[in-house]
Amino acid sequence: MRDLLRALRAQAADRARDPLSHVDLLPHQDAYLRAAAHHRKRLVRLGNQLGKTYVGCLEDVLYALGRHPYDPIAPLTRQWVIGSTRQQSLSAQHATWSLVPKDLVAPGQRYDSAEGFGRNNPYLRLRNGSIIHYVSDRQGTLALAAAPGDRDKFNEPGRAEPYGEAAARVRQGANRNSFTLTPVGRDCTWTRDTGERRDL
Image (cartoon, rainbow, N blue to C red; front, side):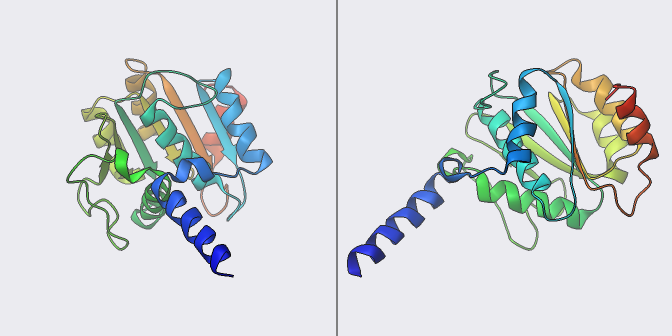
């Protein structure tokens, strides 16, 4: 029993040190990541609690570290995660914090379970200089118009205006856009029509 307890403690410590080495993906999450080999713009549409936010945040971290297994490019300097509400943004920040290896986080970076990466201008900075910013859909248009970026991820259905800013801006960077969403409770007409035209 003592050996088992010691082994469990060692595994927990290793998981805390490097969460990425303990990721276990569901088939639809794996398929989403694999699609990055051929598509710079992608969408994953799932019901609630099926792992869309998790896999989206995993991909944010992989791109920030330059470790994407299916899209092997240099670390992306600046990514923007656009959520529908502040609460939704906090969920993404929590998922990201649970995945990022803490020894790769920049000195001085703060995280709080209630406030995420901060109430005003939340972001995660890594030692390699990569930054992941978090804004809400309503903040998105102004924020995205004003700052450079390599990739944007819309976590939940977005509006056409922030996406238009994002699409134009990331063309100057790594030119990658993603949607992770549950099409319930919000008007998804624009997202559906754009996806069917393959204009995402």
